[in-house]
Length: 338
Ligand code: CUA
Image (cartoon, rainbow, N blue to C red; front, top):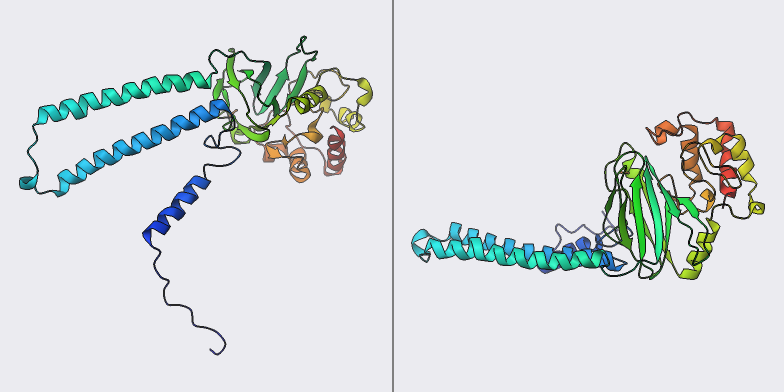
């Protein structure tokens, strides 16, 4: 056809090194991101990531060595193989080599473990996190020395940069697991038992936290946002979440939500403590994550409110949805809670 250049019959083959570089780049790109333990932003996560790379390199080298021997033994004609005496080979390869490697790994693993728990260091901040099907209750106990009152929130956690936080984790229903991959290892939240985890963020940023133990239908949506900020900013945020703050600051939407019955399960600004446990709604309009999604996603939250068992099947708080005519008013009210 005139005006069109013929399509090339075949492309020049990519040289192998280019394929290898492209493949490695694609693989390494998968190591970055707000939920990657290989993109550490704190000392505990850095120790875990280092151990991961050390073990990957070590295991790959041993795998290559063993595969090399297998290929050699398979391909080389029997009469051309050197005659090995089996006993020394088994003694070195089967006993001395694994003992040396595993002993080195044990010593190294112990030092990594000590780094991950900040052995010998004293935490300067305490946080309590309780797992619920399927949300996170976050409590900052009062601290008389710093003049801080108790602060409570849900599905968000803030840390001051450079401070060592001790986080007590527990559960009120089934086993969950607390995990902020970029800041440290995971820890099970077990009903009837308190476990503690230490974390520190080295620089400001937002990191995704995720429940790491299957805990029912909505396990995958049981996530939160952890924010690391300079101390001043952290304190301002913490003050905004304090319980029993100035009553004058009750936002307009609180009354509408109270009238709709939300106060039975959710803490509202200026309202009484709820009878049933549901996420604290005092600042829901300003949260980094609501219902497992980033920000205040009106469309998604609206769908949840009208058909909760379809959007989040199995949730125990919202059994029935609200009418289409009510939903906009509720969303407007929620957005005023900041
Ligand atoms: Cu909670 Cu999985």
